[in-house]
Image 1 (cartoon, one colour):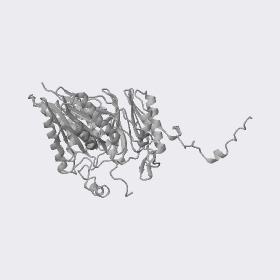
Image 2: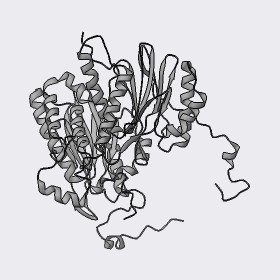
Image 3: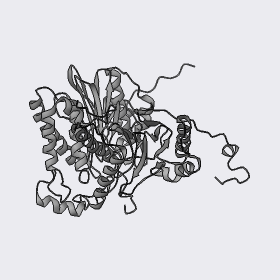
Image 4: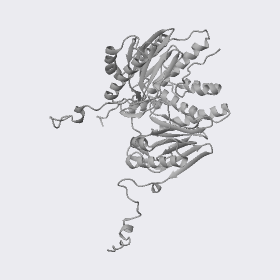
Length: 291
Length: 234
């Protein structure tokens, strides 16, 4: 029986509507992709109609003809994840920043992948959405074999590593830091991949600011076989510190739990913060003008 | 100018808004197109039709947003013929995303896609710089939108009626025009629901006056010649 994956559907995708209207959209999708800048060499894009356009573009906008991603626009901040007794716990806030503006506050930055894995991402959201599409296709082909096997977290992590590293080699990276966690046949797996293809596997991982603020806490307080409650409290401790100290953090987060049974992602919720230190009330007592 | 942070997202000369309400969507925009400091067109129409039931608000480079909308209209037209029924808003938004994402190094345009289809009702999708696609109950874009984040945080609520939604949009665009030099002119709105599409036009004199703005007059002479105020009855 063909099993089209992902009970938790990813962000609005061409694929969703394609399942309802198979023929025409895939044709148009392919037509658009045929015009797209190919990875090896560029310039035959849907937008470039003539050679002369290139000349002025190169003077007034030297980056236009390049095929490298130069900088991110809409970005997500830290993702933190740990192994616990029954599997993996991952936390990420729901913010999508646009430069210094906290523009989008309901972005889901963690998504399930196949039956056994969950992917969390920080960095450019459009590139994360594209990675989800690549993974959709990977899982689809995996299911189409219909052989009873399914890609586990280790395999998906390896796929993502290759994806990120190969893009890095072409100077056109997917501007993300990824966290991939999962459980298969009782084996827990938690790995991380950066935008330049640096990858590793550990009991606890974090991206972005989480590397500097969360990992020291985890190094101190993580232990083998944490209960669900202990794990959630530990992640919340990390997320609260990030909320205090990361300018792009947003107080609306989700925690994903991944066990042998599957993935559940919590409803969005907010953390209480503490400001009741005496020194906060009167910070400049004894030193007027200081801060 | 040399000290500008060249890597900050470019702000875009416009105010565009898309809002869902109970039964459909309301799209709104200002009408100013500027070339540097000069207003090239003071009555532009930034709300562009893609199909009978899907419209987009364009911001950023006028050329880039126009070419993207032309391509998407062309693809959607083909798609509608092959499908045999009206395209959905989600499909239209995804086509916009494909072009924006795959040409991200060359394009400078932020787009709000809004419409109504029989499967999902009224929907708004934002496609900002970079080609992220994000479904939202309401979306704001363009340089004028900076002045509206606080306003919408306070004034937006779920389940508005068509008239409430349109009034909110008109008020918001009008507030942005008051403070953003790159936005101005008239307020245009487009309402899309199961009954069809309605275009509305709100010139400056129909809009409320904000802080430090005065009632427009024909001439100083009218003020000088105005009848003297009534003496007080003490």
